[in-house]
Amino acid sequence: MPKTLITGISGQDGSYLARILVERGHEVYGAMRRGSTAKTDRLQEVNVLDKIQMCTMEITEYANVQTVLSDIRPDYIYNLAAQSFVADSFHFPHYTSDVNYMGVINLLEAVRLLKLDCRIYQASTSEMYGDVLEKPQSETTPFNPMSPYAVSKLAAHSLVKNYREAYGLFATSGILFNHESELRGLEFVTRKITSWLAKVKLFNHEPLPLGNLSSVRDWGYAPEYTEMMVKMLDHERPDDFVISTNTEYTVREFLEMAAREIGFDPVFEGEGLKEKCYDKKDGKLIAYVNPKYYRASDVVYLRGDNSKALNELGWQPKVLTPEIARKMAAYDLQLLNRK
Image (cartoon, rainbow, N blue to C red):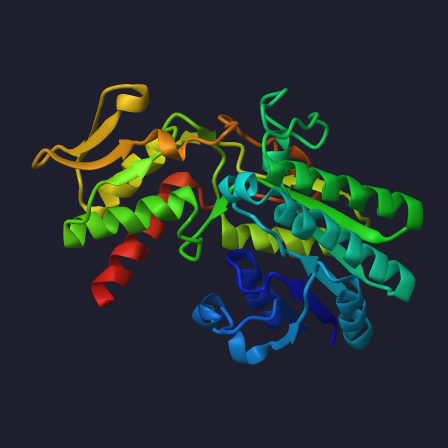
């Protein structure tokens, strides 16, 4: 039975990944930071909490990382641990760098020095493309990061490639474009939209404030993307792969699709900072643009070219943005109805 260590196991991706690996017969270890209360809600929701072994690991502390890896001696490591909220990286750049970059150094060095025979997956991100220099973005597109988060992820991405080439480690990076699901964190714009609009519908909550509605994203479905993480480590050789749907939608379009699923008839008025979204049925304001939610430097367009993953890994996305918006909106509406 292969041993697999997942850092960041309590997040959206970690939970779906744990479910896949448990079903494949892996002995799964979940690395979590020490805290007063373990955040295991998502693991419970996908029904794997009692099927995995939890361990305490602080990825920014090398000695601790080395001890954990020495004790477990995993066959596979999926590094999903990160400070992953772009907006927060502007407020906490040092912390973001410590977790997203130094944490990766600690993992790679521990694997190298312990001489572990294991395969490593590093969670890279489309945010590394930043102010894009090519449309759509592929593995060969130059990176142009626009946030401390993206800079830290690019540094880690480069480091993984360096260790792969310098030391022969089986270290693969997945350049995943935005991927959403019912388990997405409430701070991310898609889940913010669906959860907030459900409260507006059911409880007459105040309207939803948003940033740039014209930002374009390539949104995929997180359970499918975690399946691709497994395929990347099953591949015959380590490499870097873009995982995307090669489609594009604006935040405005996602908002409209989610609003219709929840029961609104959305109509937009105004432009730029004055843009607002009303329910056509009763004229009620349900969302509006607030400059507070614009980033210090914004990434306005991301769309991935998934040709390499299609050809080498057999990647074929099935759940696209319209269905994702409907799934998430229906989930949040049902969740609040239960409460």
